[in-house]
Image (cartoon, rainbow, N blue to C red):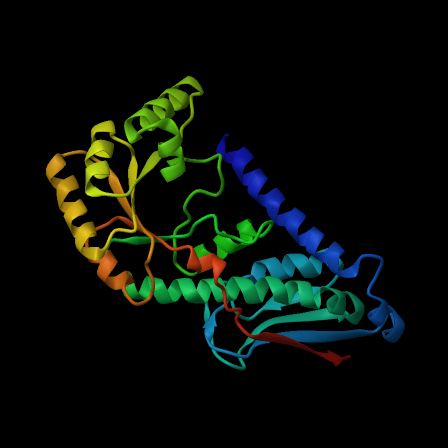
Length: 292
């Protein structure tokens, strides 16, 4: 898939998810707003932070409100990636109040979840910034929201792993067991990549130093060290350095705030963390309105 086609695909995911979220909320109409608000009533609204964190989803919120009414005027006082404190003004909107109220919850849902992910990611990034290790997300995302979850990781300073099943060959334990061995799985993967002329990397998981040695003989692009202790990770890094094989190492499994610094200091290239997106505490944000 060419880059332009991939960019279009991602943008399509984003646009469809926003429209689906709005449709899911209003269905036949926002009957509360229809019943209580004059459709010509004007005013303005502000979105503020109610807690400290990294704001994300400002651009998404703007797209949500534009879908509700392209005539709304918006002014972003904070950009994606900015640190905000309680009370900080993030976004200001003006125009007809009805479309602002219709888009309120959808915009806040995106912003709060994305800001929660960005805040958590930034916390991890800060702990490993003295090393060369990059923090990766995973595919453990809410179905339909992967684009936003992964964008929030980037905003927080993390690095995206594969977006889906199509942009990397990642040989996991079940693929290895079904193929019979790492060697057999790698041979099949390389043949498939060559036959289909795919410009993708091949990564294989290993569960022990013995499997690591086998994987090195197959020369993948990346090796995933699954559930290795920091001591074993250090040993694995040394083994790879002595092997002379040019391969990147990713650590995964049983990694959290309590040990991510120690894991990064072993010399691995990547650390993948499912909890960046599967265990999210939303950042508290709120919207208030004022009449013209």
